[in-house]
Length: 422
Ligand code: HEM
Image: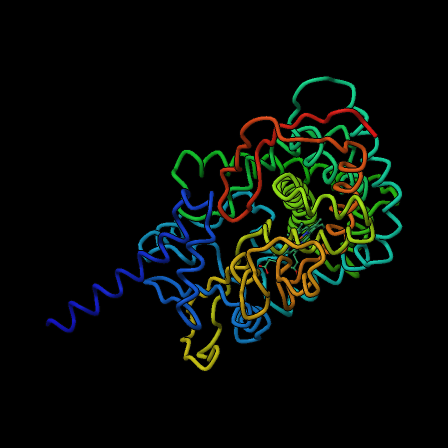
């Protein structure tokens, strides 16, 4: 009995450890101390509902393994909650991260969905967009320049640049961008677990709005196709050589749209904040602009916009020599892996010249490796470089506010005074 009780208590403590990691919004401010506590557990901390790893090698092994598949979102919840959700049936409006989104399905479906959009995101296609991205950055910065006094960098710049680029890329009217940002903000918490009911309902209504808009838009394109990416996708769904159903099409389009503007905003805001806090690094960039691409990877490493993802074992398997049973959930903490001292020398130090900055897993690894990685890197570099070159005296002006999301790490507002333009 004593042994049993001790085992249960241990399990509960471990359960608390992962519940705290997964569910405690307080940690959003500084989760890194918590990751360091988890680092003592090799290869992972075992909780009641999941295994949690902050080790780079373990994250990579799991993310690349064919023995693991994507996890359903309710996976980390206690069984009764999961059952209740299952009884409630599938959501009426599957969002960008619900099946059949490529992010939420395994091979071979994944292979098919991904192949259809891969061509649009090659490094060459992205390089061709750089000039236009620079123009967009310039226009937005000129708008910033016009006022005096503090402005919100997130609202006026970091969020607008990516949503404009992805809208133009997809051929969506840019007049929709403010509306997308509002819906996207409302829907982003869908990634998080254990939301209170009122927030869950608000997430659902924002997802529904995005879903309805996209469904109508794709129907318009079917009637009157243009030469944009989405018209191209629609064209692949005709009945004869059909590749994507309408359902699949909407979810793919929504994923690319939402992933295109919900994440890069955090790279730009987190990167700005890092440069405010590290004037020495900022000076290095001002003196040598060839450091920018590496600086962006270093920003992705120390302040990863997507903190974690998860995978579920599809069969009994092993990770780092430890047995993992079929069905087990492994939470791969990307932000923790990116500060793994086994891979990164003095991992907490922000160093724009770090030789192996690109070894981070901020874009994940394996078959779901971020489709937009080249685009995000280009946008981050163009946006941050243009910002800091135009406003050499750019400075924070008041308390930044973090986004209320847990998986997405960034700022809701970041007040700054631009200062005189260069
Ligand atoms: C997947 C991060 C920007 C499109 C992912 C994943 C991560 C990620 C971590 C994989 C999640 C997992 O393994 O479970 C980021 C970060 C970005 C960024 C940190 C910006 C700094 C973008 C952009 C696009 C995009 C600009 C634009 C199209 C996608 C898509 C997937 C994806 C479509 C799903 C890929 C698949 O399932 O095969 N991203 N992303 N991302 N990302 Fe990004």
